Image 1 (cartoon, helix red, strand yellow):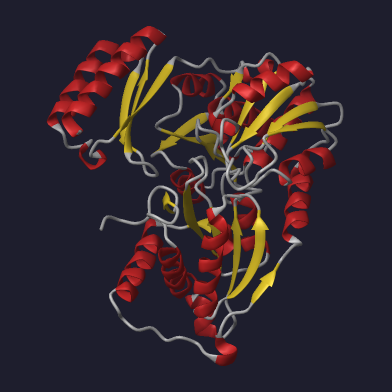
Image 2 (cartoon, helix red, strand yellow; image 1 turned 60 degrees about the vertical axis):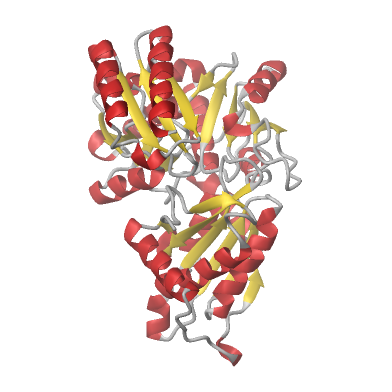
Length: 452
């Protein structure tokens, strides 16, 4: 069995890869690792548990709650809320751990279990390895001390979580959003109630699409992975701009008034300048990943802002931010972390801060996002290959060297295995989109041939 934890928790097809038994066992193991401090000092450990609207989240939530309670952990069930809401509440309520059931932007049949440590922070690799090790020990039959009687955990519905999180979001804003008309695409996901409520409380006129989750339609032709409906709705309603979330609302992409996409790099650029102006951009530095567009790096250098780049994954962005004391970081995909107000990527918070910048400056989103020019970037997902060999295949390595020679200093190549899906991502950046496409397709063919 390979490592269970991927880039962001344990993810797979619900009831096939991610079973109730696995969710329960992982929750017991997580309780032993993440709540051990409370157990040692004699206090009662507590966990916050939330989920997105997927139908499978209902039985997986029941399994997680059962596992935690059987390990002596009291559970606060917050229901359908975004991942960043569960992280915020874990910290705000002083809980020992949080659990979010979501497969983020993946299609409905998938689901995932994300564990959150004290303070609302994502787990380190070391903590994940400890949880997985204990899970495997229990799975092999090693006994563990099971509480009985009054020692078992109690389960409580915490309906106040919704209002508490929305109030937190609105309180963060530097100014109101009065006069703005905004279209919100909620991906039929976890922010379907939260995001419209927060924007409305802040003063914006809100139009929603993709905000009717039924357990089966999450990310289905809508949200941050399908921007076409949002682009059309923004133009149709004459809105100032639109915001799109993914299924668990930890990411945010935008669309300007003309229907043009504003990606995570552009959003980071806009917020970096706003935060520096307000004296909040510590060390005049923003953290991105190796997938950040070269145009973003050029723009930040021109503006006197340093760009630090990490491996792909907002957890690695966050680790760099915490280690060096940076205030802003994120990914091209729309995961944006504003560390003074959130411990993880928060799509609703990002959208609100972007809207606040538009309202404060009186400039259009297109004008603000024009601080950077995106270089053409083509991404091809190569499926049904042995992604574990992408870094060791001599055929792939030779093809990359040839591609880099062809691009010279005008572009770059990046191949990486997905941490959440069974595929290899081939990314090529070039001054010309046709050159990027030709090289990316050639590399994808080599990956398919060599690793298939």
